[in-house]
Image (cartoon, rainbow, N blue to C red; front, top):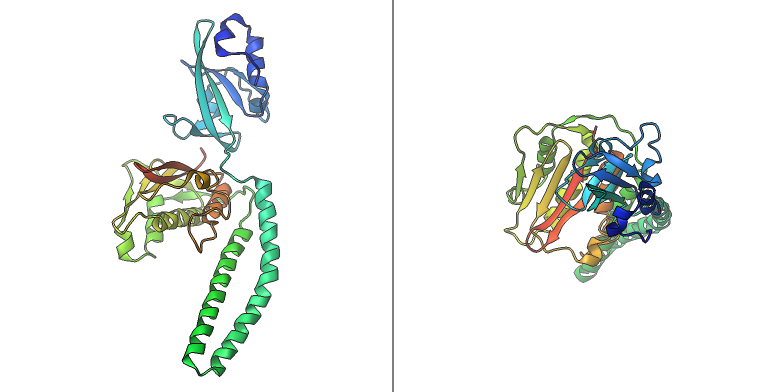
Length: 327
């Protein structure tokens, strides 16, 4: 970043202000704090927006903010999601905001995901055939053995192989999810109906821990109900698996026609894991591949949506928020 400081701005021209925001690949806007008009924008912000232009436009017409009360908040601009940071400053008698749209560091890159999916395809091809053969021989041995102790040992081996097959099935699901954003036909979807369909598959002793809040006047989501169900199924399962105890509570808040939050009171996620929570194979639980949230993220990409870890502390518990872009 250019060495110019905010306290020096009063002695410099608009050209100097442009220099201040030019030396970065992050989209940056200088916005009038009172009327929210864009005064300046750097090349990273204006690229892809040549047809409509930015200077003189109202910032909130260009950038969709999920929650402006949170800093950094979730922002959608030019078909991408960012973390928004704002900083106030005073210049030539006026109050301005320097608004920076930062790429999310907690998300794996598209190329990384494609490379991973190609690697998974190779591993599945290499492992599935020998495992199938081993499973077949174990079934033959079970028929031939008569000693109870030997049968039990074979059953344990068989169970282990079945667990490996389950993991491979999960990896295959990840492999088959397109990493790219795709267009799906959207319908008017009641998120509460989708949530209750998901919860119906759980026993009552689990359902009684889950509470749905839907304020009056909330309209339906505009998206694919099939993809939405896949996303919420993963997030709900994740919340159930991380309940603090048998008296724990899960809250699902339908906040708007674009935003939904799932919270539980489990132990906070360690920082080392939280920073890479959406990367595959990042998990704190044994016998867990740690790819559920990666799958949810890929499904969200299909809707041009986003998922954020929005709360993670002992007082508030853990919250994941799913957002759809503006229509």
